[in-house]
Image (cartoon, rainbow, N blue to C red; front, side):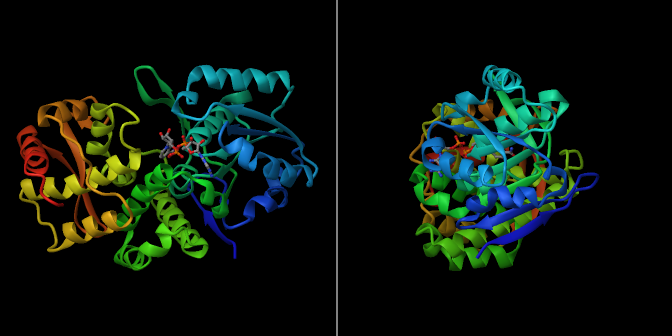
Length: 372
Ligand SMILES: NC(=O)c1ccc[n+]([C@@H]2O[C@H](COP(=O)([O-])OP(=O)(O)OC[C@H]3O[C@@H](n4cnc5c(N)ncnc54)[C@H](O)[C@@H]3O)[C@@H](O)[C@H]2O)c1
């Protein structure tokens, strides 16, 4: 059974997110139901070299059957495609196809394709509509909703981008059956983050459904995606352009997570595994700062991460090197590293932590290797 959520953001047209197994086959019909897109003739599908062979034919069929003239561009799979050079190749290809302002860009893939397609769509002819068709768990629960688009620079990730909301999101959960385990776990890290920030209800429901989620049970996966999208939409509705501070909660686990990704070398550990480590660390740091943490919370969160396959990393780095990596990240203000901390489920706040507390917590976590 497919479900539909509506994302309502201030000063933006509402958009729907359709979630469920098989919704990809209704992509064209669902797009035609959107008033602004009823007259669109040209659709450009942007996909990558892994996703294209699996789902491009279905996406094309679903669009052609509704009268769309469909073109496609396939970029190499991987983060390197999120670059200004690849964006420029896509802009040129669109111009050569003589696509006008009345075309539609369809992002078929994970967060890389979604961020690239969103960026290209937001800039080509000063903006053409984009439909997100996420095919990774991470893209379904996080990146396809909220309107952040970006490309990377050699100087850093996501340094150039726009806020540009999609016109429709089509999350076909059956596509997750082909997702490699490492990518699946990446999304699981974000699922736990959403649940723990959202509510007791979501967190304990997730604990009760860990096994079904790990087995990629269709209805449980769809329910997880639905809950995460509802959570993300509520956060973005309060802070569309990351200016009021509310959206900052989404960085939970990411401060240390990004530092580990960079210190260990990008690709050594998956993003999700690093975020999981970062979430465990945030609770250790709270303890170090003398901040109250509800009894048993760290252990329950650790158990949930373990049960999903996000175990403690086999990783050793000097505390000073990790602190250095954190200081190079965007979350530093006035020289202090900022962390999202939680006292308990859904009770988050942002703190600027003194270096010595960070070093202390890192040393404890990595030299004593306590089971967090
Ligand atoms: N815009 C946002 O709000 C936001 C939020 C979080 C992350 N991001 C960005 O998202 C990107 C990461 O996204 P990702 O984790 O989806 O990575 P990804 O897009 O690189 O996809 C991961 C891998 O899985 C493959 N793949 C995708 N779907 C598949 C499927 N159904 N079956 C088999 N293989 C499949 C891809 O080809 C790729 O090799 C990063 O660039 C990150 O910066 C953006």
